[in-house]
Image (cartoon, rainbow, N blue to C red):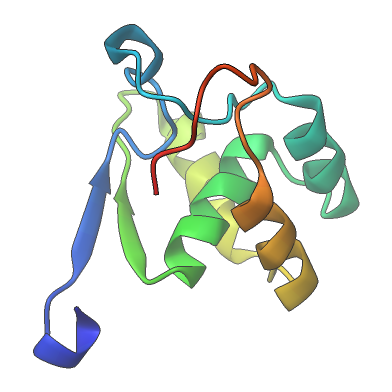
Amino acid sequence: MSALGIIVEAWASLAGPTKSHNIPGVSLGDARLMTLAAKYNASTAQVALQWSVNKGVAPVTATCVADHAVSDLKAFDFKLTEQDMTYLDSLKEEDPSMEMIV
């Protein structure tokens, strides 16, 4: 898409409403994501935002709380390694009956 000058946006990029629409995803409370976030002293949301940006997708976040917005921007205070990106790409919903949509 980028070769065509198209930027993909991710609305509800932190999987907020996806659970209610039965679209599988990895919860921000997932222990595997929490372990990786601890490595960077970051929140799971910050890791997810960094992953999205590294994948070439512009995450669209929304909040009315200034501290939340500042926290989201801290996703740019660290850089995920290639190994961590590969690990995140491999994560699936913990419920084996759900299949990840990519």
